Amino acid sequence: MMKKWIAAFVVMLPALAMAEGRVGVIDPIGALQAADNVKSRMSALEKELGADEQRLNSLRQEVGKMQEKMQKEGMTMSSEQQEQMQTEGQQKMIEIQSLQRKLQKRANDAQRELLQEMEPKLQSAVAEVAKKENLDLVVSAQAVIYTKPDLDITEAVTKQLNKMK
Image (cartoon, rainbow, N blue to C red):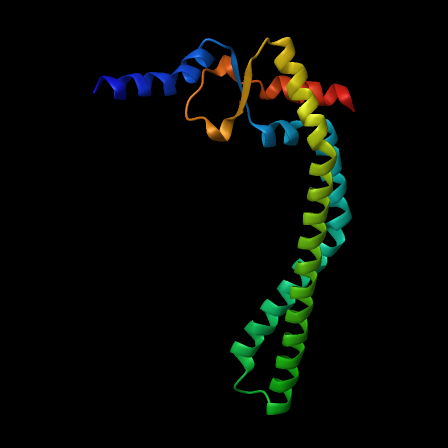
């Protein structure tokens, strides 16, 4: 029994030693999203994709109107009119799907590019804040169940990122 207690104590030693060091907590995604550079790039991306998003919404409305018309007038339409409307609706749905894929791909590519660019800056900003705050360890907020608010360095890291431009 004594061996188990000794083994447990030896395993816990590093954690106990770390408990005396200063620990900071960061929400890396929150820090990045609040950074001026990221905000401006995301705003530019939204503007870039705006026309395609408007077209997508317009197509969705057109398809909705066509469906309503088919429900209301379908019984009185000729089979040729019904086929023409179905074909037109299918073409619009294909265009919608294509446009959705295009928008999603562009958004994903932009996000990946931005993260690749910002990750080294984030690492540098965290290191700088950790040095200023005399922190021994910085952990992600997603891995923490509870922390005192004064241990959260997210805002300080965002400020450091804004200085880096």
